[in-house]
Structures are given as C-alpha cells and as structure tokens.
Image 1: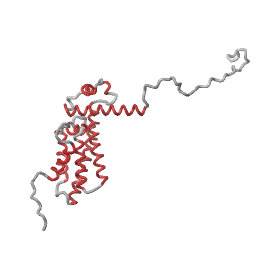
Image 2: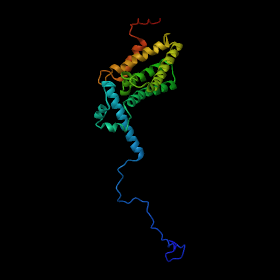
Image 3: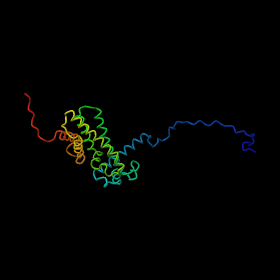
Image 4: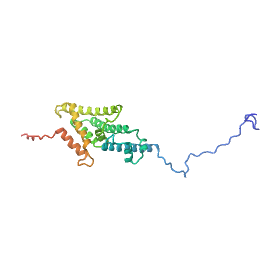
Length: 239
C-alpha cells in the first residue's frame, strides 16, 4: 500500500490548514540590540585603528623603531597585544602607514596650493609652510626621525615615490620663481634639497612644549631660508 493511502484513497493528501500569520513587528518588550549598526562599528574601528597608529608613531619618535615593541604600544593603549592584531598586521605595516599618512598630507596640501595658482614665490612659501607644519605632527616627525629605512625594500618603493613627488614640486616652483625674477638664479635641484633638508630638521628638534608654536616656527623658518641672515644695507629713498 502506498504511504499516501492511509485510509484516504490513493494519492490524496490531508487537507491543509491556513498557517497563523506572522507579525514582522518587533515586540514592544524586545530588548535593544547590544551591537551598533555596521556603519557605526566601522567608524569606531577606524577611530581605534588611528589611535594605534598615532600611539605607535609617538613611541617610535621617542624610543626609535627597533626599541619599540608591539607590547609597548599595547601597554600605552591599555589593551592586550592580541587586540592590536584586529587593527594592524605587524610593526612594519604600522611604520609604513605612519610615514605614508604624513607624505600624503604633504602631497595633498601642496597639490591644493598648486591648483589655487598665484605667483611662484607665494606658492613656494605656502608649500614650505605645509611641509613645516606636517613635520611638527606625530606622523610627520616619524618621517624624519625614522623614515622608511627599517622597512623591507618592497615597502620602501611607494614611500620613495611620494617623496620624489614632493621634491619635484619644490624644484618646479624654484624654476618658476627664477623665471619670474622673484628668486636668484640657482640650481633647482640643489635649492630644493637645501630647503627641504632644513625644513625636515624641524622634525628632529621640535617639541610640543617648546617656546615656539608650529606657526611661529614656519614664519621664522621661511623668512630665514628665503631671505637669509646677512645684514643688508638700507635702501636709499629715491629723490
């Protein structure tokens, strides 16, 4: 006998009953979810990842790259070392991101200055101010005090490409300044190296608790680098 023929006739099925309708509404008594929405969780993760990078940059600047361990970074953040791996892969990746962020800041700022236009000397001063400002920040100081040297060769290429782009902007501005008559004739390559080298050194000696603010350092640095320290004879008034 067929399994479908339990006294109902072969091939017949038991009558279906209409299912009870399900309500899609959340009961008023349901507790709120302890999890944040996905976009909110992503924002919180990014805030924490940036805290890891900034803390690492501060420690690298204070102690050096090789003398700073992931344990040191975790301790300063009051988290466990395994927690760090949710935000980063290893110490090399941390340094790569710290240096890249500073160079990206420079590139973006200089790009905006170039896009805005103006005389070459005004653009050069604005770019020098951006450079000086970045190297007084945690990530910028990391570029100067640590740099890309501790990283494996494949990771150095992108950072060196960014540095070359910044150097190229300075060289072109110097060439344009000479052409406009605002700057004395000079070797743009040498002049760019000298300007960037002097501005970079700010990242070595700058202290947030020092006597000068970043803006004051930029003002005085630009004045000294472009106008020098030699005493000039006063210009005679025309009669």
